Length: 146
Image (tube, rainbow, N blue to C red; front, top):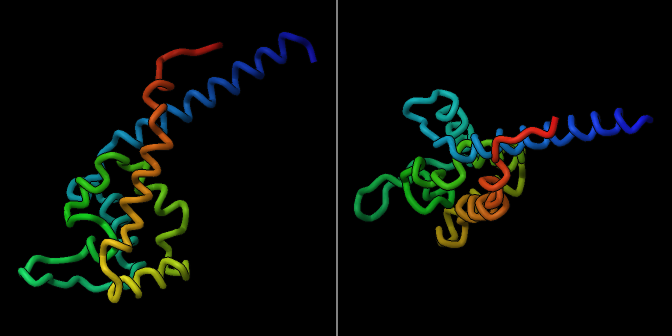
């Protein structure tokens, strides 16, 4: 290979990587909005259905839905505020929230018997995603090597 070909190939690879980082950053900063985005509502519905739980009420009469899945509150928009659509995509892409995923089903069925504080898998995974993507904002500078 000539030096020119290697430089072109390197430039293409670096452009591709930069574009992937931009896409991830855009997804991370795009808020989950099930009220205005039908696809967000569908994904959340899929996650809820895969858990196999029912909506319940706590002792004060407030509805408990997302807290049964381990979220800290019922405000699903706030729960995904730090990870955005990227966090939602990661949950689905990992097949964790699949009805065929036995550990997920087991966790959710035991979530009814265990304290809700011990089943907070979703907030913990969100915190992990935030930690993994902390440097995305630094890498999203508008540059090109070609």
